[in-house]
Length: 68
Image (cartoon, rainbow, N blue to C red; front, side, top):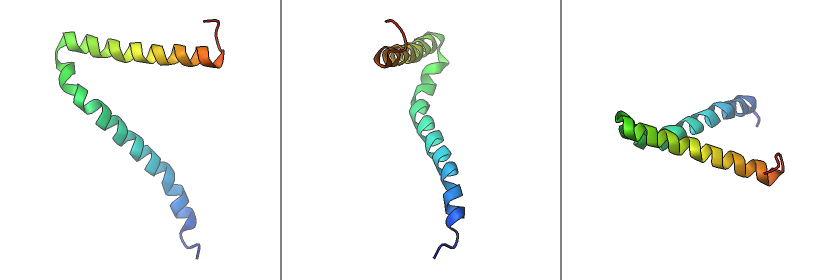
């Protein structure tokens, strides 16, 4: 009944990595043509950094990690 149970359990981390890589590829692949021009490259990088800063500051304020 439990033949290969641990083999299946140890496959889950590889499955998780595969899903995450696929998600990243499908998310950033449409942005690749925009990175060919320097103006749009700066805009895309600025938006990504701004979004990351927004999420970071929001989570810090919500969790009470800083005096915002």
